[in-house]
Amino acid sequence: QVQLVESGGGLVQPGGSLRLSCAASGSIVSINTMGWYRQSLGKERELVSTIFTDGSTRYADSVKGRFTISRDSAKNTVYLQMNSLKPEDTAVYYCNANVQTYVRTWYDVWGQGTQVTVSS
Image (cartoon, rainbow, N blue to C red; front, side):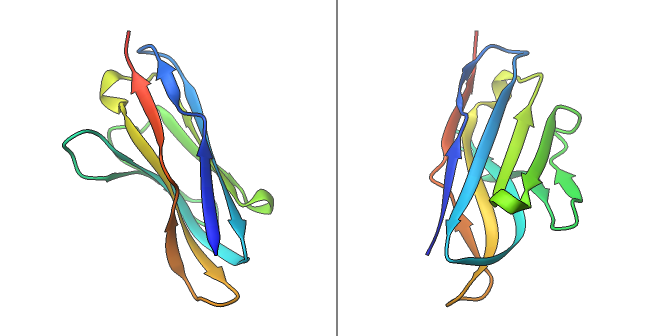
């Protein structure tokens, strides 16, 4: 069984920064993509950013130039550096990983979510 544990959320003023972390643990053989999604009240969950095993990245248009995703493969950890935060970035942020274990081949795992609130 694989678990994703997120940290780093909180309350920040507009223009401020936060760094989210997500660590995967369990019987992991390999991790393919890792990424961050978010869901705000009354809206569907949306992709924020994804990072692939070769280090290539993808971002939602709304966060390009402000957010940076990175990963430490040795630690099975993905990060999301969020700068120039706006009130519309307020949401619950979820970590996602596509993993392979000793008993199951390639499936998606989700974290429990961490709240990010941008408000003055």
